[in-house]
Length: 309
Image (cartoon, rainbow, N blue to C red; front, side):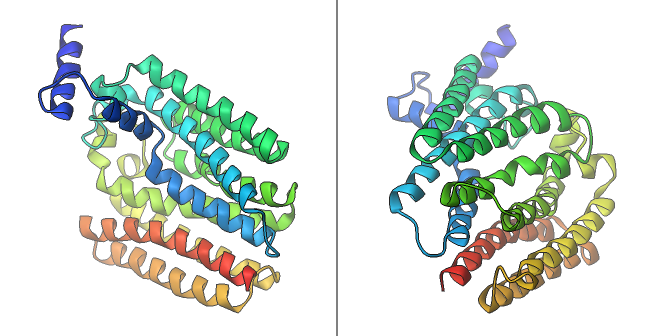
């Protein structure tokens, strides 16, 4: 107990420069950090772009903003609950050991309650101000991330991010449902693209923090199968991803603008993945990871532009 208290107090001193009493603003920032806002920003890009794809004739600004609010609340709730469930593993990882729950800046139970409240608010807000289907889908994403990925798959199998990645691919479905009130087969394309993008994106990151995962006992692919096997899997999934992005052009959902973007962006993705195999290094893995973030945002932007024009 004394050791845990010392660790917490040290974290508070590091965070607040010797003053263990955080200001209100610092406390608010810590709660915002629980929602993982940088991850959510990319999810919201996929949500809004899909809304444009689903309803290119135009949407009420209020619908877009209310969908974004509900999406943030749902994803933020999932992130906060993830912080709570992963707090012991986070304490052993250099990348995460200064998180609010680990350092003691927020009591773990408070973080859990915060996440649950955000999830409930997301469901109620979307159901009332958008539609019930979007609310149900948002909750499916939250529950999938918490129970299927974080609690079940993550500590069990190196395929955790492959199967569990479905939860992160739900926001486009939420956007489609919000824009149209239903789902069609075309709605599966944005979902499938995010689903297929997730493994090579996350495996590039896992190559950078493999030692952290090894210390925590999380069976990420580089830990269990090795770095060489992980790099090969990244290339395989990158090829499948690029092929998948071209499929909606064949079906007529997208046209020339999107096709050019998909080929150019996908070509760069494949080039970086191939370079990671041929000349493996931390720099190559980092370059691929950063490009994968830009890739998804730019690809979904191209979807929206293509449909709007």
